[in-house]
Image 1 (cartoon, helix red, strand yellow):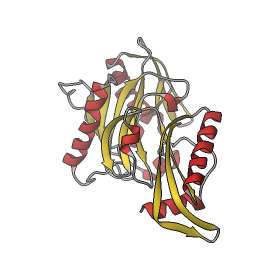
Image 2 (cartoon, helix red, strand yellow):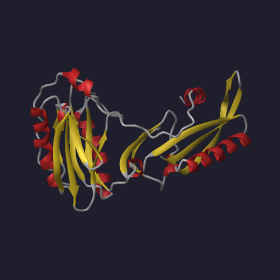
Image 3 (cartoon, one colour):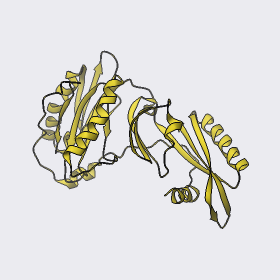
Image 4 (cartoon, helix red, strand yellow):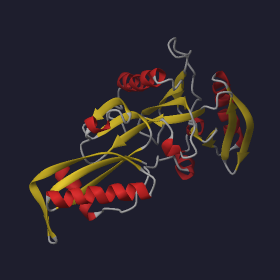
Length: 285
């Protein structure tokens, strides 16, 4: 897999540093679903961290979070009212005062303020590795995320099992963190997943490893990580490419973390030449 991924890095290399984007559910997907199923039944908060738990089967109740607000697509005002009835008490339970509620252009928004300035953020588990046919396995993985959040002082707010006709059976967690002007700089629960195996040891100290999901995937707490693979014909060339990329990161106000050089065996050959060395480069977005 490493050989294929490295080849792809050569063929499709992009010069710009780009933050990974979270794949939101589009309005069109929601409209196409026609889902009309019961609202989630909220269970009693867990004794340990007091978060709200339950199951979501209606996509308009699946809140997305950014800035100081939670929002969702809702086809009708009735759906929006259902969203508001579910989420306003959750926000208030954790010290978020709702300062405005608006339904416009099929989107419902709840804006809030908090006494300590913290904000709600969400992590979707759909890209993690788990048995989607096993509720017990999904609960296990979800719990593996919740406990580190609590230990990091990032209070878990809610955790849901998500069962719809559109999405693969999955789960999510909502939690509190301190906001930054640039969301990539916020300390959040995130996932790094590359076509290459991750050099976990190089990231020790830079972020908090929550779950080693696979050799090429990990859940972590911290700023948003970036990753780049560079190729060169010889060791001198690969070191020069690392130096150039570090300069590029500095110019774009990205923080270099670490890099690792390794020799390719066998090398990657193209019509334009042969690449004998590669480097994995890690940085903060």
